Image 1 (cartoon, one colour):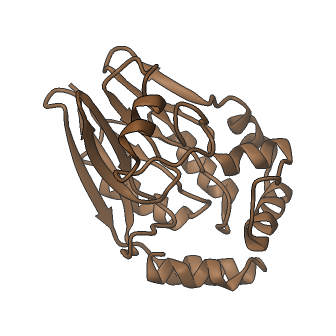
Image 2 (cartoon, helix red, strand yellow):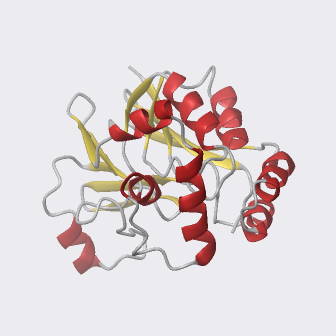
Length: 229
């Protein structure tokens, strides 16, 4: 039996990740990360260092992580997003780059009957999946899945919904929630009970916001943390 902490969309928010790890000390045995470790936030190296120290079952690349590695900004629409990608790339040390280079697009965990993506099965980096996604799209997206429990990130919105025998879960965002709540958010999967627990924990938003502004990143990236948008 394991209790697995499912974390996603940290976005270089070290303070938020630190709060999640502290909250999970007596709750979580191991972790799975759904990507977007980097981007937007002010402490990329510190975030990767802490993440690498966790007992990780696995971690996948997100669209921001992939863009930073491959210098590909073609699908980023906002100036603050593109600037943050370039800024983050300039900050990364060799240890952080090595960690990123070893990550995959997806993970299948045969022992637990789960699979994980940042986006979706058709596009592991950029595909958005929501509870409101149409029946036809869900049938197509998940037609080649191996297991009936799939974890996804990317939207920064936490949810769990069922589609026939399939359960799709998004743990929400650790470092930049967008559901109107500004706490760091994650989920815990109990492999014995096969249950999902959504968790949220306050963190020092003010500290992170001040670091964002000091780094010269867009002030909107600081403001949105307080608003949970």
